[in-house]
Image (cartoon, rainbow, N blue to C red; front, side, top):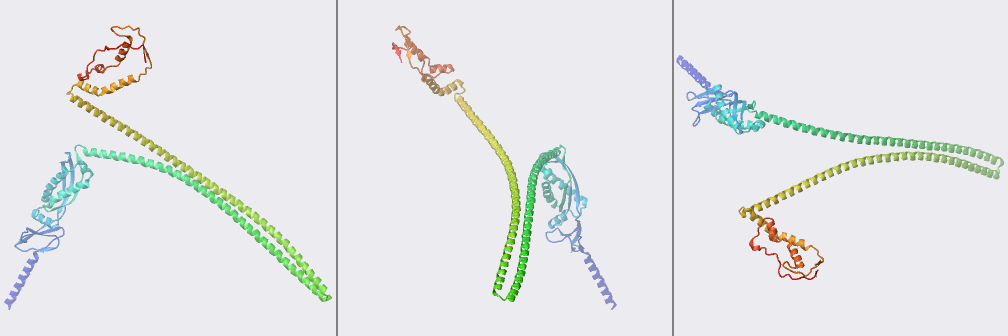
Length: 516
């Protein structure tokens, strides 16, 4: 029994130790690290990378190690990097890298950076970054690097990140601190840009000041117009209110007069009616008394007649008072109508005055706008005419230039065809103009008007002939022959045009004494 208990205790201890050993082989991975399990991790795999969570590491055939994910800053003082323009620049910068958590890049880090400390990783990344940074700078000009920093950083990320991924690193951030060059080219670009910005700012300030002055002038002008319109509207309103007040007062006075007249009329009518009733009762009582006393029909008739006379008299009095009341009412109406007409007259005068002022102001503004439009139209017409004249002269100059160039080319061709003989070239040019020259000479002689030629000759004849024949011969000799004209300009005509023969005319006989 004791043996079984001891055997059971040993088994429990062994199981506990095995469980403890197996639990110790389960490795948990912190969030800032990568668990790399290497050894026999599968066919065709060199390592197994785990980020977050945990994994069981088999004893004997597997082992493990951590890769740190902390960022690694790398200071790079790149100097004399050659740009696309062959200008060397200095670009001090800071690159921040870290081991990537992407699966394919983590495997590269496990294969190439495992067991390396931070300094060794930094040195490997430094060589890659410097080489790729020089390559990027060599593809850009100074202007592209200095002005478009976003493109510069994009190219750096593209080239540097792809190379760092090969060793398992990832580019987190790039900070270009400054870009300088020893030749002062960047400084010159900055001064040029500053000067251009200052000039643009001055131009914009001048334009804004001009716009402000124009706007202020327009605002002042519009304010004056609006003030004038408001003043006119105020006067109009005041005059309309005054007219309304007068009309209202007249209406109230008329109503009061009418009411007073009606009250007096009603009072008088009431009094007359009461008096008539009193008289009628009195007369009736008297008539009754008489009738009763006298008991005579005549007295009754007399009483009735007297009562009728009293009624007529009362009616006459009432008519007189009614006529007086109507007269007073008519007078009150006439006075009220007069006041109304005067108020309407004042209102109409105010309205006419307002309309005239507004019309004159509108006409004045219209004339100003028309004058400005006419000035602008004249200016544009003058500018258009000037441009048209300039274009016309430019076209004429261009045409004359082309004509002279064509003539010069033709003269060169003629001279070339004559093999450089200037005399032969001049002869060819003169031959083309001979017809025109002869035509001009013929026109000169043909336009001579000779009405009459009178010759006095004594009939003598000799070796030189008579006077008439000499005159005709001399007249013919005044025409410059074609050969002499050519000789005058130093040109010898070809033989097929003939030779000059003797000038003595043969066979000329005696002419008539008078030739017309």
